[in-house]
Image 1: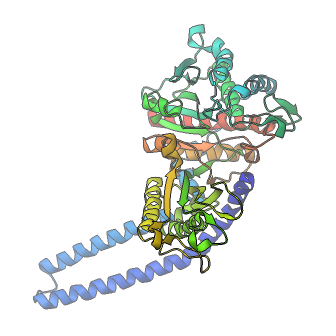
Image 2: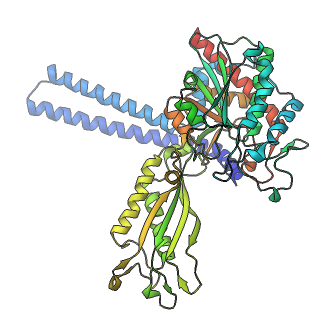
Image 3: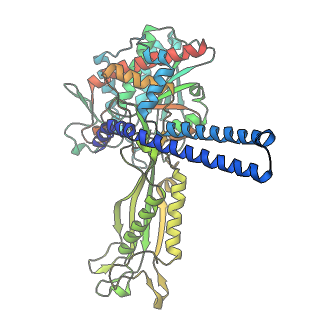
Length: 553
């Protein structure tokens, strides 16, 4: 399960760090021996050049030798520093940040923002009560995020600038009934430093009520557990950040930073382009957030998430010839062709996109993977060889590889198989054929990609910057509130986050739902976790405020 993957990723943190420490002396020893060998070779080459030219060991020759030595030494030093930084674990990067930004690391919670449990439950109940109309599964189910936006606006209206409060609220709608909300608590910084709380979305995945033990479209409170579709993903976060902005407006602490909360539409399905955060980005509505760090609040288990994977969904269709199964040599079995082709394509994929060194550094639980997940073939009786078979699946790609390159390579693999008449593929027995020369017939492979069929963007992975002050602030906040912090990465995906990072946004990721409940039946969140989340976010904002003040000074 996704929860088990998260837990394994976190449990591997300590083992990864210990292994890196054990291997470091041997690695450094190899580097020292290599440098001595390079110096010896360089010295021999310089002496040989001097003897050949007849130059004395002074003057121009010695100057050129010294210059070459310093150039080589500088290159070697740069290589060594670069290699050490690449090999450094996330924990080592965090320690380096603590030493370079001690004021941020040591900062305490000066804001004291908290949520009142009953107030949070009441607001969340209103949001969950709308979820039957928030399900995102086009074209059958189109969410109406305006229903959530209305409850958020009702909660914050008394604190809006129009009512004499401090909050500046903007409703941005690109598609009728599907707004995004931008809520600002203005600071005084002349440089416009910002602290972004973004990514919490107002749509949900579908829920099949008969498969639930409770009504998915109604909030059920049982002790600490809050049941209902969206409690973890992501209406629980919408209610949390709304209550947090409400507390900011009530207490009105003086700040140099502008705190910006952004609630978005259309996260669960991105086939309709320009509705949610991509539309906000294109319209320039988020540009001011480049002047600060954005915390993307749509993850789980109250830990910092350092990276997510890209997703490429694909469909491989094999076309053969239908024939009686008793005469298989007169047909082309599309199932056999499709399955052998997938086996070949997977082997090529793993050779060209193997485990990447940075996956260990970021604590990814798996490397990049390509696998089939569904298969269907033309209908017929059991004594018929099917003429068409489609195998579908996905690629989960860590952010250290390009998704566009993977798409191009898979196309290339398929084209090469077609052009070679499947010469690289195994046959299944003496009667298995992919070509019938007497008929001038040959099998055919075709690959399609879901993002192209849907007209949506290709989902790239994201690796958050480990040298960001935001990474130090969120790790420190989690550690101070929960007693420990275990940053992790996982091959789940967050659509459009990578494009934001590539556009100049400094992004960190966290969330406070339950990984075991994401998109699951009987979805739930913990009230205690959400209460702690308010403390974590209050401390995070306080730490980033210290950082922004230091820049102003």
